Image (tube, rainbow, N blue to C red; front, side):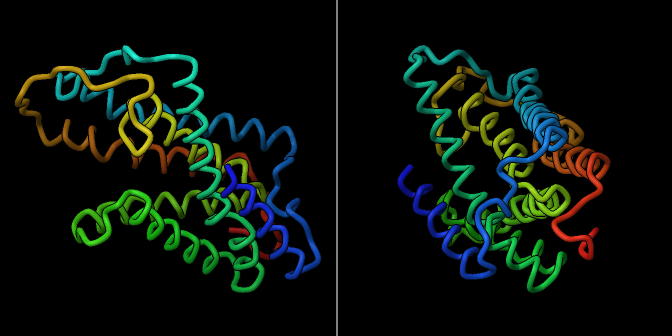
Length: 236
């Protein structure tokens, strides 16, 4: 929590020196339409993320059961950990840094650079540095997801929408299905068959469909429901 507070303070100092502004440039208090959009993309992303786990559950590749150690304290800890993690990454990758990049370099370069930073950041967050194959696979997903998140910020002028998308994915993956750095919260893996053979189509549905569907559907929804960007001359 201290790290998030420090990030807020540093962000405020940076934007003040850049244009004598404040953190309102991040759109933390958007209008009702943007709040509604954030809720929509949160649930879209959550459902897309859950689809892969539900398919694995259906074919008994992985079986999940309610965590026997579940408690209000554990739930609060899981929600808090995921929220702080997502908020930290959003402030780093879609905060005042992206805002300044958009102003200085334009929309395309701003989105591209912030997405690269987002992808590289996950090498260290998830501890895959040094494993080339894992680094490549992780970067390919996080970079494209970073493009979507940065695009959502540009289209809405609010960090709330990319925060909602990001939180929808992480809460489903880490909190509900306990598959990430903040594992062991709501559902945990139970006993499953030792070996299950599936078709290439099912394999695609398990490992690629959740990511691709979340990115595509969120992009369509964000583009459809927005028509304004941070500045009028940077419309996509």
